[in-house]
Image (cartoon, rainbow, N blue to C red; front, top):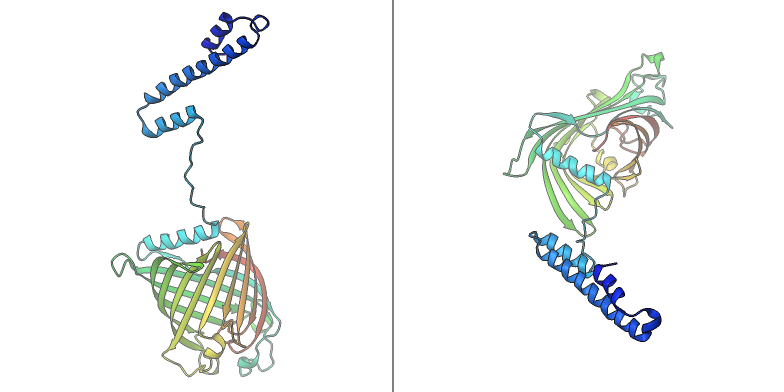
Length: 333
């Protein structure tokens, strides 16, 4: 109780003696006391030098709720990490080597092995449907900001092998290895499009070859443009290409690889999912689904399923159905 209220109670008649008069006078004096306290607090607010603090003080005295400006919603973790990855690449020093596309080791099983290309070297069909699938990928920046403040030039290299490590009867050969060097120019963007945001564009040229000769030789060259998009927590890459410098080893390869691929990645808890589609609207399509879980640090467990054509160069015209389980050392992030 304030000093003024206590004094009023002492000076006024008691409840029994004053009756209605007592209650009326007590109400008036209480209002006056509250006004007096409020005036003292307002006076204290006026002495605050900082504008924001003084305004908060006035709001508290008057009982007015303070307005908190709306905060921007935090982006989903996967999208945030991916966008940070793009920014880190843009500021990376030239000639520093880093991981590029997913690198992994998988013990895999094929429902049906493509024996046709190997009849000349393996007429007895001793190749196994069980093999290791290994992929590693590196990149380095060659030129920083080719066009003033944007346009970094990158060199990349990806190698994927199919190793018959369990097939000691034929000395555990590498059944197939695909070599994929590329050069590209990367641009950062922030274009708001209907339903999606375009975060980056890569324009480049790539060469695919299995390093073989004769009937086992497979190779081709492409000019590509990779559009990197976000939609909520979804990360999408749409990569159309045009074949250039045609080679006669595999003239119909476009019928199976098509003219573009689409990759989508999303996250649920600590689980990371991605699906890649090649030639998705055609009869000769190929689809790969990855599901990974953390083990320790950046090391993750990986379950992969591939179904369709164009998993690799030697099998580009053969429908593969492969399931593999193993370790993922690096992903697109």
